[in-house]
Length: 251
Ligand code: 16G
Image (tube, rainbow, N blue to C red):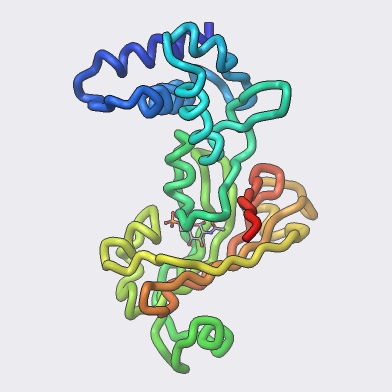
């Protein structure tokens, strides 16, 4: 059943001139993405095996593996040794790529949205000035948001952005990074610090979890090419939903 949803989506993409994707593994990757998007395979459900897929689609195992491998790296699929490949239930976020909340969720076929508590401009505090290399009194934009996937709250974020990079807080609609990109100030590099916390009553209420639930407190300082800091964001992510994954290499 699942196999046929995937097979027919792959065939549809192969016939569709608008797809313009001559490489079979990229076409299959797109087909898997679409099927997950449309909930043809639910989170937690297994994908057909590599062998079954390659037989059903007339593709080599190498091609199927390449298609799946990319989606595992993105965190859309997870692989359990000996058990197969599953649609990720938790949100798996690779730590090596500097992406935004909006991009991460869209890539998983989820609907990112934000509720703003604060979206204004003010003066940098002494602590922020130290963290961001700004002069005392410099103007900064402040955003305080709860970030949702559809109706489900996933994270709370407080961002501080120098007004030199973003002069008007109203420029941020859904995505801070989109607004920065439009100003030619999208960050290119970031330092991130992550630690485990127990969510306070206030955070737990906003995230619809029990007081004292596990959370991840993350601080991100992002830089432009010239070394200027464009964001200082403190986030509290729900520990029951997020996995942060880093790839490690020997030198
Ligand atoms: C992520 C970042 C946050 C950034 C935001 C931009 C982590 C831990 N934090 O949530 O620093 O400000 O994305 O998202 O990944 P946006 O462009 O959707 O507003």
